[in-house]
Image (tube, rainbow, N blue to C red; front, side, top):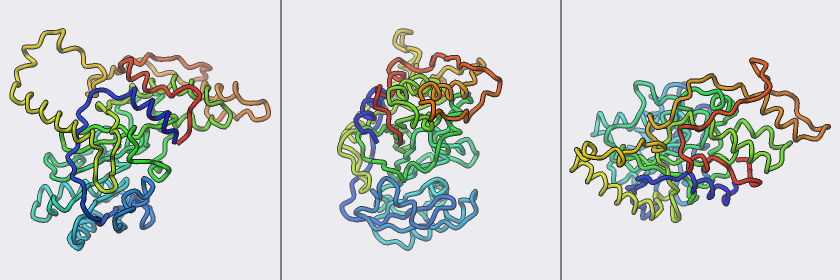
Length: 378
């Protein structure tokens, strides 16, 4: 990954946010109970993020033998593993394994007597999560979501444009085409979960949501062999804002230096931010009528603040851009290497029409543009 470039992108995207974390570092090694995803081999889930969670801990695979869409058997297996494991534990789940952990958290809320002591649960880690609150493709199902109160430190990690965990909020031509090229296995590539530039947001539900920025739009990666880095950066800057306007994202901020997630330790800056967030929330609770007394100049329109109503919904017909993207590659490629027309335009249009990204602030739009000439692929 191009760490220098990601720092520049993440720094620009960051807006003021409550990114506090309430985790306590573990003093000794823990046992990681890693719940596998659908059709994954035993022991695969624990290898994510460069094996970060097993570097100093003992890892056990919860093979989660069940049908592809049923989390209940895996949830019962996880319960048995928790009860049979002594000492500190870290719960870790990938994809449907993450949904399995969510199911078990809901079960513990209903039956507290079966839940482990919060003092021995160092961290709950879910990634590639179909129930992710902001982009999981199962997030709107009636059963989905976290308990209203959860006593466990929880980190939910998403790779930007994950086809399962980072699905657009609204339908859009560009965002759907980008999703069609997206993948779900990037967590097992060279990903540093402790990278200071990883974006985090501490939600009121007690979960810390982490977004790891995509260096290149999935729908553009196939062009990379034929285009220069500078041209790839230009295309990314052109299309990324059109894609991002279909997402409702929270107020992410870089996590900063000092994270050691493998041992359940957040970065020091995040812990300081949590204290500030608590003071702010306490003040808001004491003065519920403050907003009624605010002047129009104080309130503002809230653009770019991450709430569902903040992004303007584009009701116009989206342009058909596949052929335009293919033409970009043909224009740059040598004659003997020009790619075939891999994607065709359903309506026969030859050019894409740009749609302004009205739902983002200038700072957010700037963050969506990679540094010119430095595009890398994840």
